[in-house]
Length: 61
Image 1 (tube, one colour):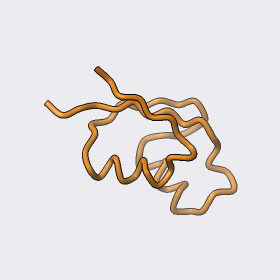
Image 2 (cartoon, one colour):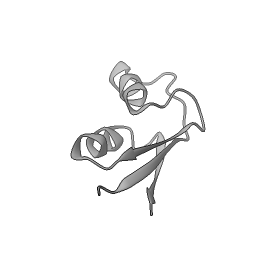
Image 3 (cartoon, one colour):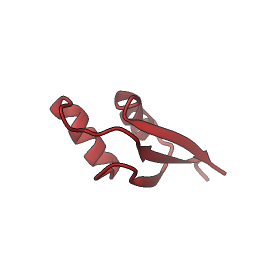
Image 4 (cartoon, one colour):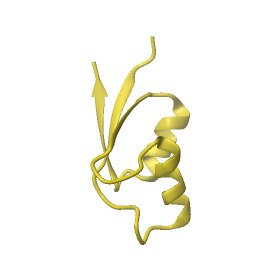
């Protein structure tokens, strides 16, 4: 069973580069303080790294 992570958007995507906006959308984050639970695959972790300044990440037990 793969590890899961909880990703919460804590800063707005407004006035950010288009790639960062699309990355937030691809992660399933639509607005501020929205939270999603995803599996911690290398692809997801790479996307989180690109927007790490906009999100808060927690490991789900």
